[in-house]
Image (cartoon, rainbow, N blue to C red; front, side):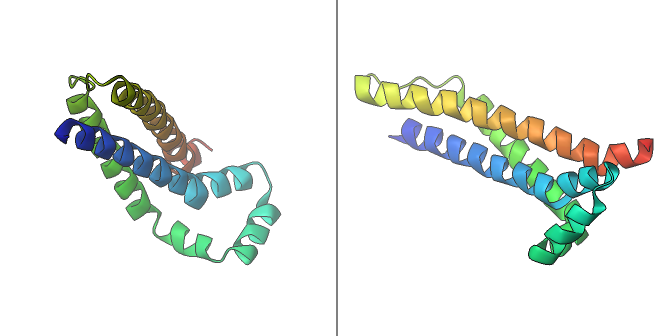
Length: 128
């Protein structure tokens, strides 16, 4: 029972890290990329339609910090849960295996999105 709960929380943390990574893309990376490509009018239209983007852009440092903390927490939980075995019950074992496989994909997609966001929001402007 405790192992199932640990696996569930590991996958939930990985999912939250994915949403945080997507948040970094929405707030900072995509608008910065659009402006760099000369599509500033598109960004202006997005800001007009979604005024919350301004608040996200102003607080991008905090968004990146929260996303990084969630990614580290998810990574630590994945590492500690890697050595735990799935239950002996075939149905629970299949569900456990699916959770582990899905969680691994979600986590690494989150990491890739976060790295892309950091590059576009902080490193690429220094290169231009």
